Amino acid sequence: MNKLASIIALVFICPLFSAQANDHTIIATKDIKWGLLNPLRGDASPRAADLWGDRTKNSATGMLVKFNPGFSSPPHIHNISYRGVVINGLMHNDDPNAEKTWLGTGSYWTQPAGDVHITAANGKTNLIYLEIDSGPYLVKPADQAFDNGESAINVDNRNLVWLSAKDIMWLNRFHVKIAYLWGKTGAPHGSFVKLPAGFTGTIKGLDGLKAVVIKGKGTHSWQQEKQATALSPASFFSSTNNGEHHLDVEQEMTLYINATSYFAVE
Image (cartoon, rainbow, N blue to C red; front, side, top):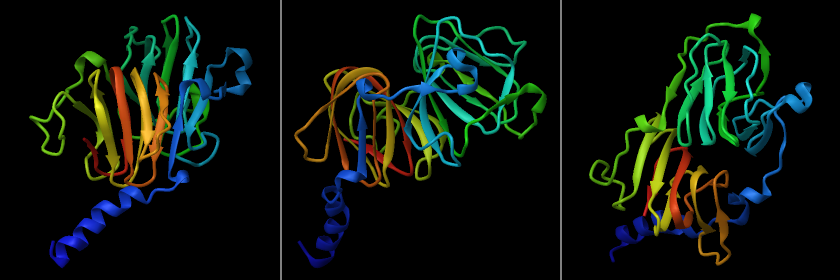
């Protein structure tokens, strides 16, 4: 190997094995710590758990929200925009006068800041992942509505466009599929990644990534660590550098991935 090739190899290979313990996070479903989304509503409030960030501060945050069967909020607004993904149950999020449109597991929606809406749940168990780019996350009355120039988006899981290695040059594994949701590759973006049962491989984010299990079961291990953590819906893993997340998939798995730039599935 010539000198230039050696330098290139060091640049791209060495960082993969330089990650420290505090460069990654893994949260198993059983270890999630729950609180109230809106403490002022007491027992009527949905339950919530921050997976990363802090929803009470001016911070980007990813959280889980759990709704009781039959839950329906009064018309309200939020001070900030958010993205939502259904993990379990049936969810409706729309104008107060809109006909109910129930979104199932793997569906995606956005809620613009200032837009009056209601949120309702119609499953035996109802769980979503909710993501904000800034905070704090607040609920305000409908009479404080304003137009921030955005439009709400509701994407049923049956309307997702899935791409494979036939469509994407950097996707090296056949039978792995990806559906883009927001942003663009090479910049901050969000997408679903579907891994088939029996998949054994890695996910590597060039500048780190955050991943939430939406569907399926398997195990996760970081870099060359032998310890494996069970993954199930609502589990979370992340990294702040380009280390390797090793996954062994028992049941077909769908991940929601928030990546700072490029990531690879190998």
